[in-house]
Length: 392
Image (cartoon, rainbow, N blue to C red):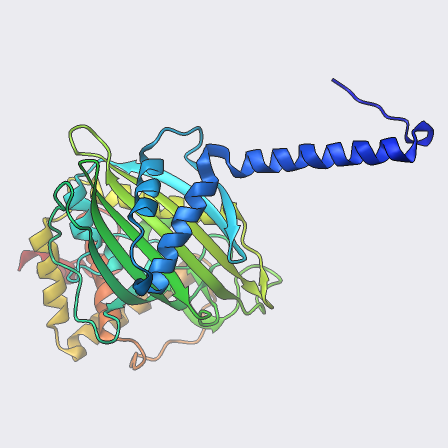
């Protein structure tokens, strides 16, 4: 139906009435968009859990947690969509199913003896989890189910994370976060709610490259500030804020499917301007989802105790031997970057000391190389070294 008003022949009073009606209609449309799929109460529930992560003294709002789990389990038209802005940050939601038991996914993904990058190799380069000052509670090596009506099991932590090169800009950052993990029983289903909230602004973004296919998990890290986008190499970018709530919950009737729903917000760019679009966030979440499914659904994934053994073998290596293997990995990454035309042969050669690289980071990156070989992916390290880890 078309409406054609001749404003020149209409009284000012009538124009005013029409204007008010249009404003009302616009407001109704905005409200309808905001409440689509129940997103308004979902946003509110997510922010309550983010606040609990920031300040645990406010206490867990179990109703908010239940709201998010119900939303993730519920049917919806779109598995991905924009979320309302919060704290000046762009938001997006994405969900996916993984064919794995809840215990399998959680025991590998949140284990103090398995680095986080092991299950997030295209999202994380490294991460270090520590307990908040004055607390001694650590991540469990095995998560015990919460019985129906049982009290949720809660852990607070602090994480220092370094991500992989961004799909669009090639930039990677390091940043600090507060973390909260909430294990609960939701209507007979086990659910883990993982909450993250960045503290402060990230370190300046540095240039990185994806070497080949992103799902081969090969990256080059230049340690040089800037972006790889043509004409924007000068841009000094930062992550100004990041917060998310991830829900992992048993979904299948046979308890062999885990539904993951991620509510995520991001504010990043340069000169204080946020250049993040919801589509950027969704691409990053799809990247994480792809890895989760590849790893957790693979019949070649090593048993939990075998994976932990590899971690312990690497951790017990002398710093001299560990640095030797890590230096070989970094050199292989540089050689592949030259081979694929990402950098020139004249690019400065990295110093072999790696004095500013922590032992934990070396172990984490070497663990990913071992995983690649185990899953049948090409690896940048000598296979005899990786085979020696899995055979012991």
